[in-house]
Length: 303
Image (spheres, rainbow, N blue to C red):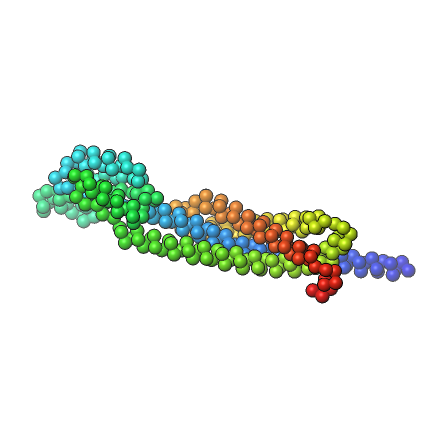
């Protein structure tokens, strides 16, 4: 008799152990699958923010060259440069005197042009970096027109083709990122929702029993939502660690990436991944539990 009782207890313990192992495996699978989806969403956010920073970086490094008249004295050119620098669209201005231009060209050519020309052929000039907000085709047109209005300015040039190419390509990239983000959000919601539904499916009878004994829907949902939030947070942390590893590898491959990958980009990406993880998991569990709460008892055996 004692042998039969002990055998029965051992069988119950094995069932409980296998049941807990099964739930643990389901939770681990759900966390891993959610993490993979969140990594993709995090890459979309990271790429979008980096592309925006790259646009600003290129725009702020776009050089507008101002060439002064041949008969302009250095002091007159310097006065004009101070007037130009006072404009709100100027981020940085570098004035280049005749002597500095001659020195630069002598280093570049390997010989001094004055030796065979008998004079300094270069004129004063200035290199202007425009603020990113004003570095677009329309703004640059009236900026160059305004600078040309100064009496001693003969020419204003900038890389127009580069500016148009950057603006066009960035618009295409941002549109592609938005479309990809929408598609990934829809796909991730569908995948996570199916996995969550399968996890809750195994506990549909427990949900029904609680409903039959008079428990409120909010009381029944509460432990499931708590579990979903914990799983979403864990999945988000795993995804953040994976993304941090990718950024670290990217930094070692190209250290200058810090010019466009700022701490702000990393913080927004990390917080977005955590928020996505919490939101998607919670919403999926909420609707999945509700679907079983609405389901009649007879139908639970036919699902």
